[in-house]
Image (cartoon, rainbow over all chains, first blue to last red; front, side, top):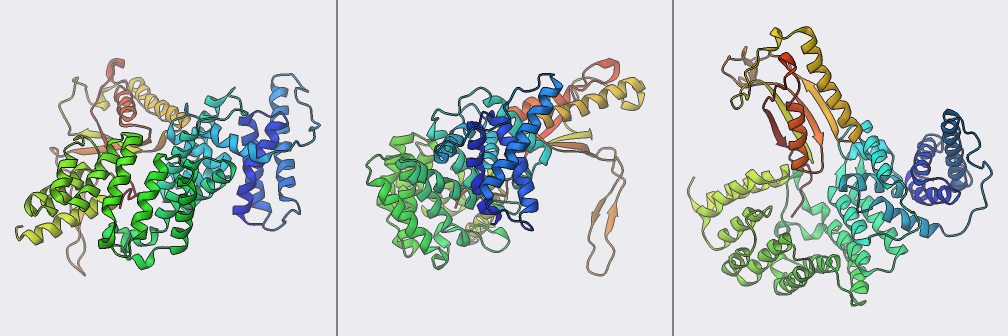
Length: 382
Length: 134
């Protein structure tokens, strides 16, 4: 029984406690405590029935908490110590937890933290380390999130779009501490895909798999960013790509297109090209048109301008870029790239410098700075 | 999103109010100021937004290497005209707007006569370690 298997039990155990009459916040706390105890004792003394052990330990902790609470308030016996027999569906419980933890009333950072703890079975410390904040801060963030959810029914389906957004947010956080958040979000999305029948869940899973397949080639020594065109395609994970394509095709066959399926289709076209020059850019532009129709997102419009530039040349790309608002992040980086392709090297170098100044991450800033240096060397100026 | 709120001993835009230096405040006024800072940090711990807070001494020096095998060169103490950082608080919040709101609160710590000092704080976003895009 390793930690990963243990984690998978967490949402089901929370579900059991809730069905026995515990409120979500207390049940989740009790399971977290039982989890920490299990991580501590199981390596030396593994239980024969891991789930039974967790349920028993968590239920005991829940009762202790209730008793000390009611002792304080002088109203003993509020909860029946005899648990009713376990009803059936653990799968539905887990699905409802996804909805609850990603409830639209929660700020994104809180939804991420709560999802990782209650659905992902991670400890507060692991989540805190992954986000580079103190454990006490993360504990408060989670307990405030649960306060916000107080009184919300656990038996009603919620907003799937918010759940997917939270999972994608976790995926994009990548590594943190010794925790691989990308792999964790794939696990959670895979589990969600097994619990639901929504093509968009499959679309998100496919998108994650296709992106994840390129991870090893995406950074060079010292975290240096390697753009798609320069990546060593021999290092792409072909098994993950194959799985992503199968998942995507099954989703597309349902004929209910959504933004994640469209994004995955674009990722699949990149994955399909043996070399960067073989990329089917016209078809990628078509997918961006679909995506734009679905979302109207300015970021999609920006990425579409890149695809148009690659498919129809820099001037077409610049025309597409003209429809993108000045305040869209990374617009200057795209403008630099298009101007470079249009042969305006000096202007491009200046724009790369400007884009580097506005970059949100160290890797992008350094990459754009190198691009500026490269283009300056090409243009022969200094 | 993480932001650094930098407090300066000196430097920055022209202060909004003339305030006597802290050593001219009454002990009770100094206590009230410190209490405000500590209450503020506690509040952010409770909201799950606190990351770190540190104060820096006024002393110190610039230091640089001076070639292999030679001791580093120092340049100090700091000139009176120099921008001087006094300390920082790091917060993890949902938006730039929230960071500005919190910096505004922190800036209004009480000073001499119990009046808000409304000092300038420098607010800077962290660059993330996550590359984001290919």
